[in-house]
Image (cartoon, rainbow, N blue to C red; front, side, top):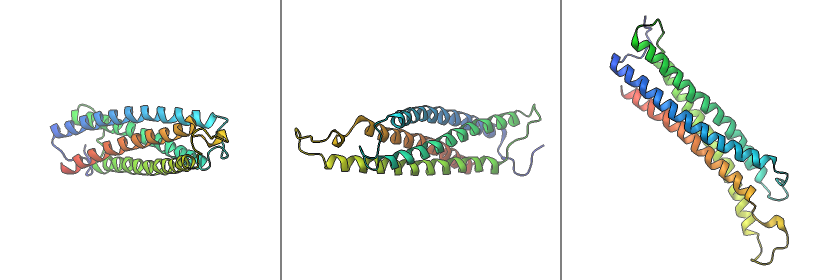
Length: 193
């Protein structure tokens, strides 16, 4: 029995949308998961390093804070990508009509897609803030370095730890962009039907 809010598509289009939702959900889930692992490992290495202090690179701690906030948002984006896979399963079961599965409604699918887009945008904003602050800190550190061969203090050098934080922000931005792009493409396709 269909509700009024059920997705009103012919059966073959419903199956096609369910398959598209499943494939896009899995691709988004796997890419975001792999990039989250890379982001998490680089953040974990940076945070556990005893040399990460405000004295060695002023401003880097703020960049790390925004990167951690973006990483937490990325975990939410991974959950939402998995939710898309679950919704596709419900749609496929409903399209077979051999089970008593309740078909998710168009508002439910649209809401899940919009939520994933918003989480992706917020996560990208947080990671871009972290990346911007980290790059400004590195730029200031590079600009204040003395001429080559005249290093007075080892803290004036740009360390690989500083670059690791910037790399974690970049991979986080890519992960959020992937999730947002996948959800946006599905939402556009659903609206055209």
